[in-house]
Length: 599
Image (cartoon, rainbow, N blue to C red):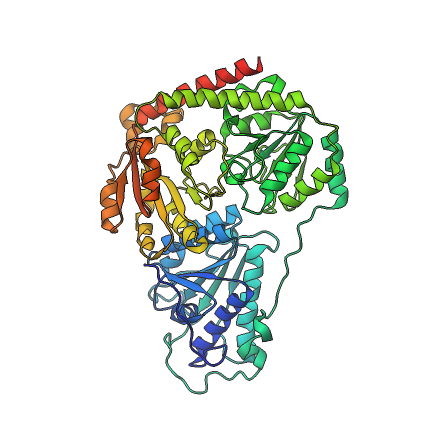
C-alpha cells in the first residue's frame, strides 16, 4: 500500500523523545535539507526509528510498500523520473537482500538511490539472533558508497555524525562523481518505538539539534557545471569540419534539454540523427527533420554509400543489435562518445574518445563553432531517403495486418501518446519493438526504461514509482512475464493520483527467445519448457485481484479510447508464431526498401 506523508509536529528539529528518535530524525531532516523529496518505507520493527522520522518529516513524500523488492524498484523509478536521490528503507535480514535487484539497476543506470537498511546492533550479530544476516557491504561493488553508520549517543558528536552521513550520502548518490546507489546500514538498540526516556538526548549545540539556519544542509557539495573544455570543443569542431559525412547516434539519456541543442547541432553540420526513444530525441517539439527512426533496416543493409566518416554518440548506445554491430565494424571511422553519466558506455570498444560532459553543453558549443562549410546535402538526403523508404515499407505491411500485432501496437502507441506523458517500457521485446517501429513525432513524452542491468523484474513498480514522483500521466508497456515477475507491484496503484495505464503484451511466454538460435537448436518441447515458458497468465484476473479496471485490445482503432479510460490494465493478446513471422517479413521488406533507395 502507498500512503502520502504526514506532517511532523515537534518543537525542535530533532525528536527528543529518546536517543533513537533524536538520531533518526537528525539523519532524515538532513536528507530533506540536502534535497531528498521522496521516500519509500517497507514496514518492520527494527527500522521503526527511521520509519517514524521519514513519515513525520514535512519535506518528504513518504510512501509505504510492503514488498521490499517492489519498494526498491518503486524508488528506482521515482529517482529515474525526477533525477533526484530517493530514499528507501527496509528492516533487517532478507528484507535488505530483496532490494539488491533495484540496487544493481541503479548502479548500471546511474540512478541516484539512498538505501537505508535497519540492522541489529553488533552484540546480536553472528550469534543466531533472529532476522539477522551479515549486512555489511551487502551490495558489494554495486553501491558508490557504503557506511556502517554505527550506534551512537544522542550527544553533539552523535547527532552531527548522523547529519554529516546524510549529507555525504546525498552528494555521492547525486553524482560525486557518478550518480548511483549508496547504502547506509543503521543499527538500532531497544527501545525501537518512541518511548520517552529522560536524559538520553544530551546534545546542547544548536547546530547538532537544529541544523544550519535557513534550512541549509550541514554540508553542501555543489555539483560543478559539466561544461566541456574550450580546447576539447575546438578539437571536436575541427574533426567535424573534416567530416561532412557524419552521424549523430543518440541512446538513452535523461530529459535534460539536450534534444533541442542536439537537433540544432545536427542542422548546423548536416548529420542525420539516429535516435532511440529513450534518448528523448525521437519524439518532442524540437526540430526532427534529421531524425531517422527506421535505422535498423539501414544498419542491417549496411550500404557503403551510407557509411559515415565520423560518429558523434550521445548517451548510451541504442539497444538495436544491428546498429551496434555496424558501429563496431566501422573501425576506420572516428567515433566520439558524449557520456553525461560519467561512465564507460562503450560496448563497441573502438571509440576514440569519451567526453564526460553535459550533452546539451557539448552540442551547443559545437554548433556555435560550425559555419556549415562541411555540410554535404547529398549525404543528408541519402540518409533521409533510406529511412523514409524503410518506414514506408514497414507501414504498408503493418497496415495490411488483421488484428493487433506487436510492431503495429508500438507504431500506434507512438501516435497516441500525448504531451506530458511518461512511458516506461520493459526490456525484452517491448523496448526493441519501440525502438524499431515508433515513428518520430511532436508530442513531448518522457521515455524511461531499466536498461542498465536489462532485467524485466520490477518494471511495474518502477513505472508506478515514476508516475507517483513525477505526476505525469504514465503508460507502462510490458509483457505477460514482466507482469508476472512484478504482480505485487500493482498494489501501489491504489494511492497514485495520476493516470497509470499498463499495456500488457500477452504472447504467453518469452516471445523474444523465438528469435534466438536456440529456437532452431532445441526440440520444440524442450524449447517451450526452458525458454518459451508459457504460463497462461490471466491478465483480467490479475486486475481483479487488485480491484483495477481491465480492458482487452483486439483492434488498434480502440487504443486511444483504452488509454483515455485512465488507470488500469490493457491486455493485448499476441500469437507468438505469427509475431515471429511478421518480424521476419518486416525485416526483409524494410531492408530491401533501403537497398532500392540507396541504389
